[in-house]
Image (cartoon, rainbow, N blue to C red):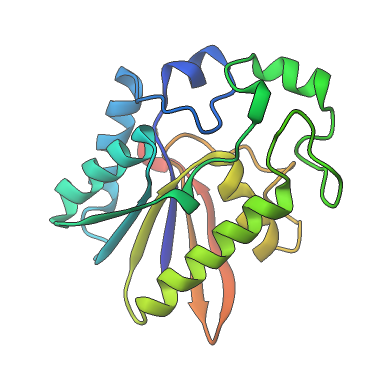
Length: 195
């Protein structure tokens, strides 16, 4: 089983600024959320933990590691958020104005040096498949980012959920079963630990 977790809140999330691959840390609320998701996952029996190499994801993973008694977090650049190129640091609202189809532009050129949806989907799919192939029979947690997680959800559900359709909450947990080289969505955007 794979637990795919979005990082906790940052100041830029709160201000609705595009983070992309900028290395923004958790704010006070984000640190609290990281502790909440860590407590929620404590007794799930997670054996391996992976994280994007960006601070907001790593610090969320570190809280989970501490609560679950996991000694090692493997970081990976391929688990990073989508690069939003020249638009990083700008208001999210401007993204809709400049690139109205930024979250539905499958098969078309990404503007402003943004990574294309296919590119981020492929890098996440490949890395998650490698992780699960290496971890047969184990429960694995991966902490990553909203836009890239949504492309994976889009892939697994054939576009029913994910990119352009699902607003993932900070520290939400989406779970998948990986069996016989096939992915199956189990739970989507669970953030009950924040209520």
